[in-house]
Image (cartoon, rainbow, N blue to C red; front, side, top):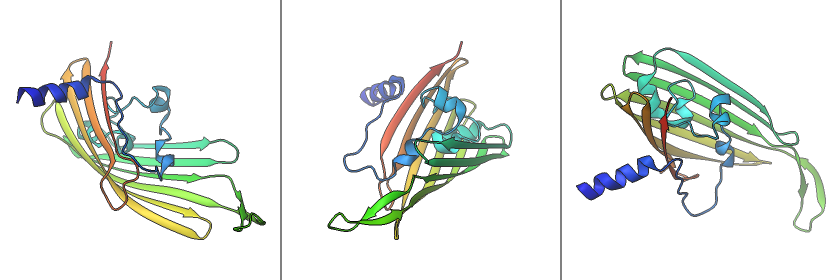
Length: 204
């Protein structure tokens, strides 16, 4: 019991720990940080978010949501790449929150070639993600969250889709100390990118 508690404490107190699964990452557009504040903090937002962006960072934050919120982002990326994001969150009642998010990424057009390397013209691709999240506060300090994702990819005339799951914990350890653990993009039909992210934030 003591060993398990010690391991959990180590995970919580290791800021921004990431352990990816082996294999090929097939939805890297999900790594683009959403929201100005999370991006400015270097994606260290799992222990801070209690807003519309919680669906993507830590669904457990929805358990402490205090009002209906909307969030959006437009990113003019490298070359002619474009990235769009919109999210909404609503407290069903105190301690219970729902959230939804939509992500869309369109890279620049690329040259299409045949097996011999002959140019066939330009082609295009697009990637999108749909998230539905739920957070519930078990007490004034602890909240748990769950988010389901559907990711779709299209390259030229080929397309595919996959599902994944996010699990989150949000814990107010003290008045100025918050701990969070998030298991992101786990399980599902296609394991896109599995990682465990833990953070702690102490406010001044």
